[in-house]
Length: 120
Image 1 (cartoon, rainbow, N blue to C red):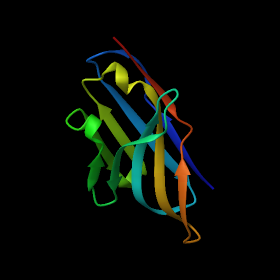
Image 2 (image 1 turned 120 degrees about the vertical axis):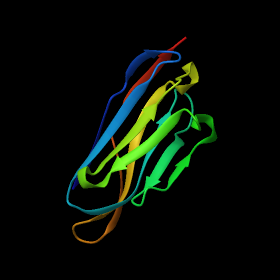
Image 3 (image 1 turned 90 degrees about the vertical axis):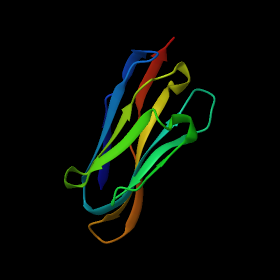
Image 4 (image 1 turned 135 degrees about the vertical axis):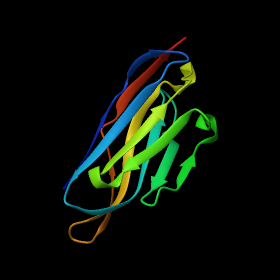
C-alpha cells in the first residue's frame, strides 16, 4: 500500500503565503507525476498544478505567477508554495500521485486533504 500525507494548510490573510507538503510512502517503485488539486465548498475538484519526475510543470491559469510546484524525488515529496493568496483560493487541497508500485503496477493515489482558508 501507498500513503500520501499532506501538511502545511491553515488560515492566512489575503496577500499572505503558505507552503504545502505531501510525502508519499509505502510500496513505491517510482512516481511519475505528482500534483495538487483543490475543492471549494459546492464546487468540483480542480487542478492546481502538476509536476513530472523530470520537473516539467503544468499550472492552472488561476494560480499562474502566484503558486509554484516543486518536488524532491529522493524524498518522494511534492511541495506547493502559495504566494499572494486570495479568498477565492480557500479550499481543501489534495495531493495526487501517479506511480508505479513495487509490483510494477501503475496506480493513482490521493491524500486526505489539507484545509487552506484565506480571509479577506
